[in-house]
Length: 140
Image (cartoon, rainbow, N blue to C red):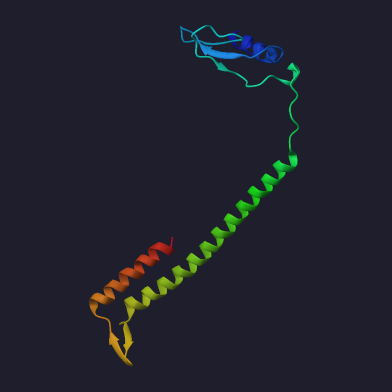
């Protein structure tokens, strides 16, 4: 019964003025045109309806369409950037894995003054840890 009354009130509401919603002293939700004094009432709609004489401004469809297309373009650009980043990460991943495999398998050296200088065990261990960090970062 209460729901039927509420539906009838809301359907007939455009013919009335402002409707308010509040909670009475018994904790029940109440609706009406005028809330009782001291009640914290919330308006159910902000403006008068067109039936009350205020015409609605026409919607600017071209502006809305432009905003929609701009959002689509931003989304597409973000997806393209994400795809490029994923492709670059894949290349970094493959490179880091290959370097790690070679570093673990072979003795590393560098050229100093035309001669080979082999990495110490500590230098090699640091390089392996650095490469493992790169693999963890790019190979997800």
